[in-house]
Image (cartoon, rainbow, N blue to C red):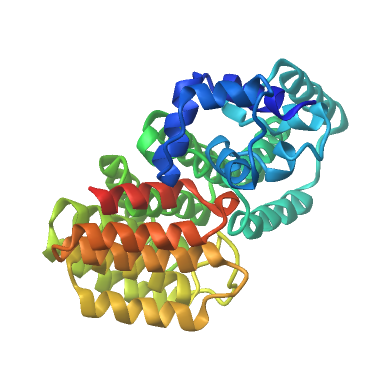
Length: 367
C-alpha cells in the first residue's frame, strides 16, 4: 500500500478533513502545513519525509512503522484507534468474544498476569497501541463476568482504557471511569473499588480535566476506606490537583500532607508499572501540583528528587518534569519563556512517545 493511501485511510478513520489533519500537525509541532500539502501526500505527488512521518505518527496515534510501509494493510487496519474500529476489526472482536465464551476464557491468574504486563507497558507505549489491545481484552473479559473476581479485572482494564482518551474530551474518558467504578463495585473487592476511583481521580486532576468528576471519585475512594493504599494516595493527590487548579491553596496544601502520610505507609517498590506509586512518581505528582500553586522552591525540590530515581527507560516522565518548569516560568510572568522551555522539552521527546497528557500539559502552559 502506498504511503498516500495509508495517510488518507488513517485520516478518514478519525473523521478528519485534510485541513483538520494539517491543523493538528501545526498545533502540535509549530509547523505551517497546508491542506494542499496533505492532499499532495494522499495523491502520492509528494512523499512525506522523516520529520513529517513522525508528526503523522504522533497526531494519528499509530506506530511509525505503519507509515513507513513496514507492515501490510491487514495490520494497518487493526492499528486504527478503537474509536473508529474498521468493520474487519469489529468482526474479529466479535469472533474473539464468542470464541472466549465457548472456551470459558482465560483463568484468573492469566488475567492478573495480563494486567501486570499492561501496567508496565502503559508507562512507555503510546495510547493507540494500548487502546487497541485493551479493547480486545475487554471483549474477552465480558464473557466471564459471571465470576465476581473477574469484575475486578474488568474494572482495572476499563480504567486503563479510559486513560487512552484525553480527559478534556469529557464524555469518553469519564464514561469509562464511571463504568470502571461500577464494575469494581460488582467485584465486592474494596481495594479494587478504591484503586479504580483513585486512579481516575489522579488522571483527571493531573490533566486538569473534568475536575468535578475527579472530586466525586476521590471522595468516594476516601469514604470507602481510610486504610493506607496506592488507590488512596492517588485519590488524595487527584483531589489536591483539582483544588490547586481552582485556586484553593489551603485545601491543596492540606491534602498534600495527607497524601504524604498515606504514601509513607503504602508507597510501592515497583518502579515501572501504572499500578505502582514509587517515590519518584509521587514526586512527579508533587512537582506539577506545587508548580500550579506557585511554590517554585518546593516544585524544584520535587523535580530533583524525582530525577534521582526516575528509571532511564521512562523518558516521557523526564519530559513531564521539564514541562513543569516551563509552567513555573509562565506562572511567574515569563509566559513566552515558559512556553518556549516547555515546547523545547516536548520537542526533544520522539513524537511517537508523546502522550495525551503531555499535550494537555502543553496547552496549560500556553494558557
